Figure (tube, rainbow, N blue to C red):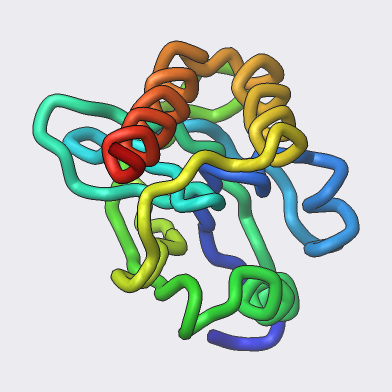
Length: 156
């Protein structure tokens, strides 16, 4: 990737926060939104996504620079906490026009982490993003419920 080359990045967790991304990735701009089919949102204290037939994860698509990606790698604990993967998604721009297929990078948590609910402050950042971008908050609430149930089952 050339120094000034841009790439797409899919955010589904705390990087839904425009304010946090402005600090973390000053070159980033919102390109559009998409939905990742047959994946689900999972909490392992922090958010990740996992394959799951029939489920969907709404994502915000950012256009980022090489420097932004380096900053995100540090923030996300790449490659030990999160790994990176490219996925093809159908992105719709902010005006709801021009749906098109794009390849976007996404961070996915490494295997060694257990399902656990997030902190309230972390969850609130995600909920704010869901509300700001018109995502179905039921999907976020479902991920929280599943994490709470997983912890309850382990404690029995």
